[in-house]
Image (cartoon, rainbow, N blue to C red; front, side, top):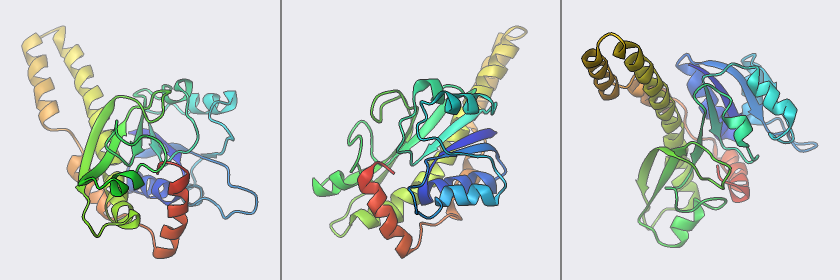
Length: 244
């Protein structure tokens, strides 16, 4: 699968690392520009270390950003912790579109503080959503969701770093596989339909029951743990600015 990663910070870095570890082809990485004097973004640093093309546009609405995405010939866009607005003219360029991570069970808790509010309001569970972004705030068709309980002892840090962070990395891999295998299933079905309708339907059912790479996705994500305590403090500051 040829993908493009759009994101930043340690979550974006872990997602990139997970896709590379299982052998996916990363065409390029889009990362928000650092502020003056700031350390290099962890996602950017890993991408450069791996010899990948890195783009840093002030806005993904810029014609240059759209042209850069168009020139990558990617199968799928992967949005991992994106604070920049990504228009439809950008996210719809990859052959299979783009999927995005959000740390809540959408449609509940869109936007910033989506991890905080379930804890503050005493919810018994929270979770994450992988969806296809539209131009609305954290709106779009849901690809998959994962739930996790909230206990009386949980904090923002424990919910995110112990569960939503590693679960999110695994979910991005799983969702990418679902989208990719679904597209292959449709292609096989359409090709077979012209010669044998019954065989085409059987192939579709078999592909849907046995999506490729899901076990591999889970194993790969297990290798990418949440960041260190120092990195967690920095990430908590980022989380308050937008959804991770």
